[in-house]
Image (tube, rainbow, N blue to C red):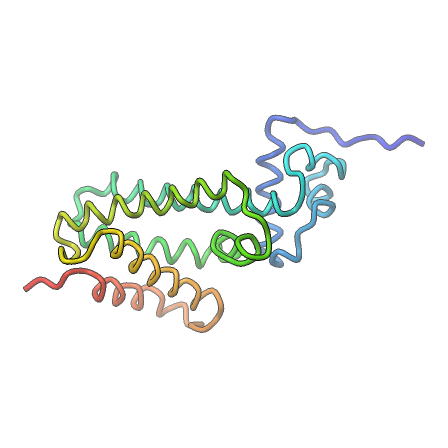
Length: 202
């Protein structure tokens, strides 16, 4: 008996696969994801995902790309839609939002910055491009904030961008890895980090 292929709309299958794959890793980590399990979850033939992702590594890279895109949107939204806030408060808003994003999407965040892709896997060209652009956007905003007096003027914007991002990433890793397990402390620790990073005003 010939197996009947499950129907799907080619145009939106990629997005459905990405959404389902993100949910699978959120439920059980990277080990919970396979192309076969993904196809079954979406309800398509087990060869259908290969029209969009040649293997699991490419699928993981696509999930990470989505994460970077969402992160980009956070920066753009805060820096352009909340212009009524003082610059220092804008920076604090971003720090809080960044950490919440990492905490609420911990498995995706792990893919964005973790060894599953960058050390053990093989990052795709598009993932490399969007990750570099994400930091470029961060650097551009830090430069603007420095001109507005949020950061000391005696350090190059690049070093401030690198150091502040390292502090954010370190906090995210501590929370996501369970070192800081009291979620009620997240915002207060983030605000303290902001106070340490920004320029002290008299």
